[in-house]
Image (cartoon, rainbow, N blue to C red; front, side, top):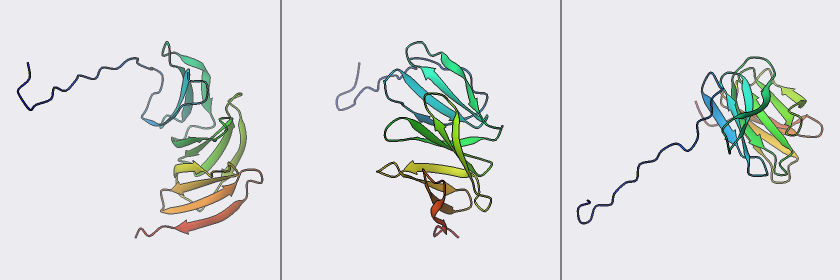
Amino acid sequence: MSLPGKQETSKIMPHRKFKGHTDTISGIIHPPGGQRVMTCSADGSLRVWNLENGLQIGHDWRDGDRAVFTMALSLDGTKVVTGSGDNVVRLWDIKTGKIITKWRQRELGAIRTLCWSRDGGRVLGGASDGTFREWDVKSGKHTMGPIRSGRS
């Protein structure tokens, strides 16, 4: 029974548990099709999950053991870009789980955030050292940066 003027709060219960990562999940995307999600983790892996049964689909996606801090799905849903603690941005093929290319930037800190341009031709990444950079997806060359943010 609720008091007048007070709203009852519903209890939120998990619908499904996904077990597999051994460290913090730092990002999640929802690829086209509606039946899967993909997560990245500080354990260095990316994993694809079946939303119906909560089971992992296929093997972990890995390239080294450094933490994967961020991920972003391309607008067409065919590629995912990830940022890691080893200062590397990786471009993955969503169908095969294989790396298409890597953009290594020694002067940047760990890649903490990524986003795609509206036309899908560029990726912008922010690093833990307060800089950001933009890469051309086809050539892999940086088109802007590193630019230091206003942070002291």
